[in-house]
Length: 313
Image (cartoon, rainbow, N blue to C red; front, side, top):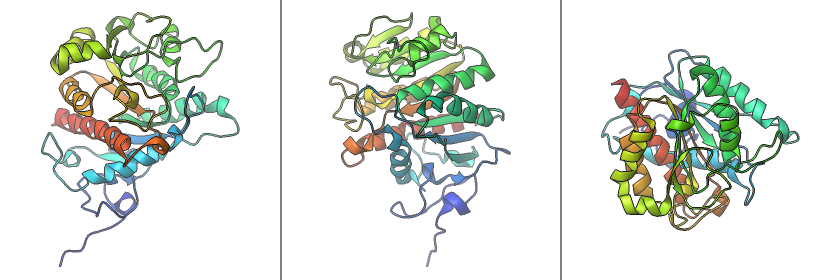
């Protein structure tokens, strides 16, 4: 008779698959061990459960929980499409969540950046589960402090270049603020899947949603490679880049978006770029159905982790 270890989020190692029943056990991302010990760690996954900067439906503060829950389905199997166990190669931990004082939401940008700074002091690659898209601004500040200005590869229905005013912190303005602070290497940055209109582009290249359908996945991949090249980059995936048929559980859904397959196929083919960090944001499970949106978001991160493992070899 086979006996499975349980609650490997607390009792397991940083490497190796867990082989725990998907319907039970403590839920970390893909059953990785909860720890804040960075010794020998290659990748840190953490959550930023913040949605006080959203302009439409709230609820993305529950995104990290939902993504972790959905990620349990990957446990114990060879991963698609690599057919490998990334945890044979990578030491990956779940850091837990960034603690934000709900009574002082104005302090959130500083707290997020400070926590990210702490993680990035080591050599680990940081993957963030959001949270609304405002969190990408302090994450960029932390990554740029370590790596210098980064090209931004943004999958999104929205440009997020609105003016939030002095000291404004909004999920619709992070790109404008990041450009004004010199965080983004604009000449090598690109937005994919846009299907709303904002006052300005801030100099980023845009492949809108209709163009995505016209040029197909290969065309999107080629455009991203051409724009970014060898420039160090940061990847941000707003789950509303997907059509609401594939991601209903989000705060600002917009019809006419990418399919899950188009997004994942694109990500799989651009992971040769020099990404220094990534986030997936705007999962709001209260509006989800059968975890469709959470499954899509967790698969985005699962593909990213696989690619990091293949790079390390």
